[in-house]
Length: 615
Image (cartoon, rainbow, N blue to C red; front, side, top):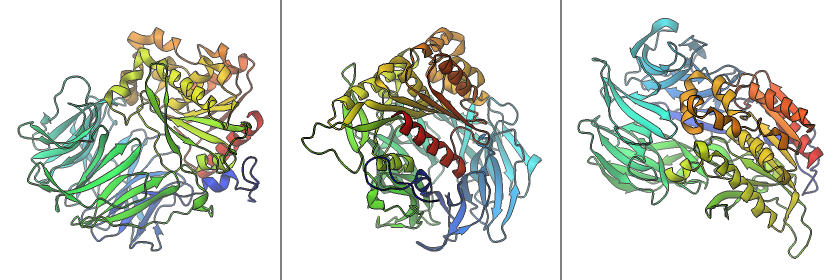
């Protein structure tokens, strides 16, 4: 396709399709022989690829239209397991791939159930997973032999909530389980496979997270990130035998949000989230709770994680992304820290030096707090001293709400920047990354305080010398879609247009129709249907739709199991009744977001046309 000229900013540019063809490589895992498996979306959706050396020619092993969600090598054989759902329905099935022959076997064959991978036994003969086969609302624990399919799984524990299998213990006689009652209230358990008894490892009062858990090398402890005794996550050791806890690393006011530990070498890598940017630290475990520092990995600034050690722990792979660096896999030397880029996912011929780095800003809101945000402006800046304010701004609100906008690569964002739009990405109250207290500032009855934070951000934009106050757009996906709709209905005079992607329009119908396995978790954040129905109805955009003034574009996936497509249908109908210009686009083969390249091109080209018309 021919590249279309830019409509704003520079004299010429690239069409949205080119930006959506910028590739990413991620989710790497090392085989025992040093072969790297990873996911890359060169064909339009993430598929399984392997690589034998840095910068070598990668080999593609899966060729599906559907996305592959993870890949994990066997510890003993040249085979791996990957996950794949259908049409974005999130009901992942597990498949075994033999890369040397290309043979693929569906191991689970339960298309109506979700399967959450739990790792290989050390000999590669069995694997574990959690699934809601028995009851859609709860997850049980299963163990299955590698050469069995379909009905060959043994249920070893009957769950009563949202359970995941972390991994097998060092002696293969126990499984480490993670339980989530809400996004910010977790527990860890150790399941004895012989007796079937479950040991509760993390009794606590109130809400506490226990994330990124790892077995200790000797099986006598679990290392994880937790905020059970602090506002932010810390790296702690939890004794399996005594329950004693000790702090290994504190984030100095920021979250220690990930840890990976190699059993053989006793080396570990942990990450701090510092105002959205990842700071990785490497160390060697001395004794049980002392860390001997190793050189930190040298990688591009941005967001990094997904650590996978080589056999023996001499090196580790990590996925790295940045605002101006598309997502790729790097491998770091464990002893020296030098990180070498292994994958070269393409930038679709767009010069990397044309990508824009955001400015990290903080703006005041209604109660005196400072709200962090990333603000990116077009590469052609406003002339010093000029009175001309003509830059349109897209206020892009993240989902979650227990999530965080971080400086990762976003091709759509870079496209709009190339077209002369500025992009403002606030981390309003309720966002993760800034401590437990900040995250709970929008719970239930405080829901609309986060919308007030968006309003304060727009007021800050009004004072910027480049911004045209009458050309500001609200856009967001999932919970960010709700925030977009709420911003348009609560503060209609601020917006030139709104773009709602798979967003919540009515909290009551959302909670009634979301997947059974998710309802309890979401009620802990939003409020319950039994106790808070009146309040939930009152803050829903459908209730306040009579205030909307700005043109609205609503996009959704027909198979969305999280926010059902009925949310899109009702907000479109209500907005049209108000005489608001509304456009709707629903993809029959997508779920909660758009993963197929052709759909992404259609969706974001339509968004660009909508904004060009109304902004």
